Figure 1 (cartoon, rainbow, N blue to C red):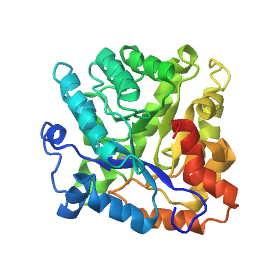
Figure 2 (cartoon, rainbow, N blue to C red; figure 1 turned 180 degrees about the vertical axis):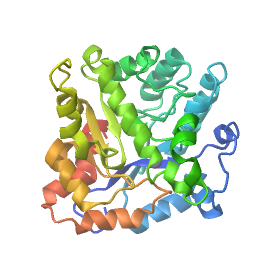
Figure 3 (spheres, rainbow, N blue to C red; figure 1 turned 90 degrees about the vertical axis):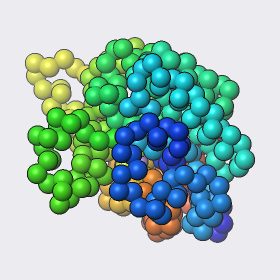
Length: 320
Ligand code: MN
């Protein structure tokens, strides 16, 4: 915690496992060498860049699409190896790294078992899932065993973006992808996919069945804090079943600042959700550490609030 009276924990910080990536067609694609070097590093380079910026702890997660594009038959075995290798890397630097499990969601019961093994045996603090599982959203009841196990273990599931469904890409974005490849990624497509997944979870009733389920979404809540009033009002109009969308979102969701260091967006999120639901994150190595930590330093907030944002809220949720 160099120069700061509070530690900095970042919890959407990615790496890549070579064996898993070898199973994902085209994953490396046009990624630059400096980015690939950082994705595959869980040692010296990563720690040096954490130290330079003042990040005390990274909660590590595999980058998208992680286990979500693996088949149901071979996915569970492969993902066990991924999580075991991550745990071994964390064990080399146990004061600097913690872990979110990868899950083979195409096999929901196996994914639930892997979550339990990752938390109980590997000391992971939850799991991260990335976008659609072979084209499906996770609110479908067949995936609820994963949420049931997360609730029982009292660990959060982090809903991370991945690419839009191919039909959505074709209908909405295709004519702009060549000129603006980020339009289906961090610029917009990722946000729509992840916000839709969050909304569908609330519509599905999974939080009625699992009243203590905890969900994390990144990127300052994927636009949902800004839209909370309107979504809630529209779903509450006469003739519609009362859902209490806003109440469910505020009860079950935490958000992070990953890749979205906007002070107005933070202010809106604090006003809608309360500061205790917002956790600092960077999205390393897709986003550099230093601008994120510098942003925290620049915020016009009291020191206690800044400490909650930088690490206190994450410590409470993740029991770090
Ligand atoms: Mn990310």
